[in-house]
Image (spheres, rainbow, N blue to C red):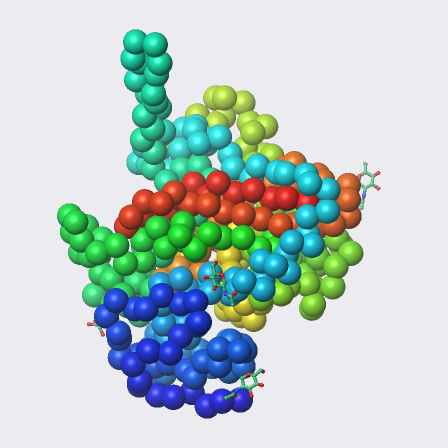
Length: 368
Ligand SMILES: *[C@@H]1O[C@H](CO)[C@@H](O)[C@H](O)[C@H]1NC(C)=O
Ligand SMILES: *[C@@H]1O[C@H](CO)[C@@H](O)[C@H](O)[C@H]1NC(C)=O
Ligand SMILES: *[C@@H]1O[C@H](CO)[C@@H](O)[C@H](O)[C@H]1NC(C)=O
Ligand SMILES: *[C@@H]1O[C@H](CO)[C@@H](O)[C@H](O)[C@H]1NC(C)=O
Ligand SMILES: *[C@@H]1O[C@H](CO)[C@@H](O)[C@H](O)[C@H]1NC(C)=O
């Protein structure tokens, strides 16, 4: 293993990396361009320097793309063998779903028709956090402790004021992900299908935390070896059954769902824990996603690292530069995966090219 170098300017980065606007004095590592994983830190080696927050890989990749750097040209070329039938699957919910939004202070989609003599346009205003969504690196900062004074966005590149400033910086904006052009291999783990196969009942509108031991068991149930299933750059997609249970609700039940007083907006998700972080880090995933509201259990922020409350959102987005895709519509894809006994697929995501944007509908497509 090549030893880490301490406190140097991040000038070496991945071959395809974008330069950092303002080089930061952060811990970096030697990067071997012909083998980017040659000295990749293990989860236990995070952070690379004791002055950095727990489990934060500051300086592992010194640019704005974060975990999308796991998608190399060869990753996409390798994934083309997933296309065997020419069968496509739209993974996006209708933009107006859920209706009403599950968090009441997020405003619903506005869709207006603008008529002219002989033709018409339409105008769409949307909060990108309501329907199927790709959380960008401006969405969530990491914090050392619960104090806002310690909030840091990915690689410490921006502040809240940079985001708010009119005409301000576009750093870490969603346009980076649009220009990257995201494609590769997706892997579906159908937790809901596995639970149903055991006749186990569950309620997606409760704070179920799915442990990674379940995900390994799901892989085995799907006939896959959980120890060798993932390749660097893969997109992990977890089906919790959220869409199925939500769409089965009556219109009245959907309307009152955001106003449950007994459950504090609890929703199913991955268990927020050190074990989950380790499991994800080791796989070198480019993206994680699912059919449910926050990927991790809601409400968030209830787990501790080194005695401090955190969420997977903080660690993934603010810490690792790992984007999260939520509210995917996986129903048809999952049905086909079971029918074909194949759980991998080619996928593409093309976010809106909004300069300085925070999140986007992912326009996600799977091809088998
Ligand atoms: C970089 O990686 C390649 C491929 O694994 C290896 O042959 C080469 O020796 C490495 N270079 C250094 C400086 O470690
Ligand atoms: C990888 O693809 C990018 C464009 O997506 C291109 O600019 C670059 O030259 C390619 N790299 C190699 C090694 O082919
Ligand atoms: C968090 O860290 C900051 C900066 O070190 C410090 O000023 C603040 O008191 C800490 N807050 C808590 C709640 O520990
Ligand atoms: C689940 O329930 C069905 C229908 O009652 C039954 O046929 C099946 O054996 C049950 N499966 C398990 C694993 O209990
Ligand atoms: C809802 O939140 C309140 C205040 O934080 C808490 O006291 C209560 O136990 C929560 N209820 C449930 C069902 O989680």
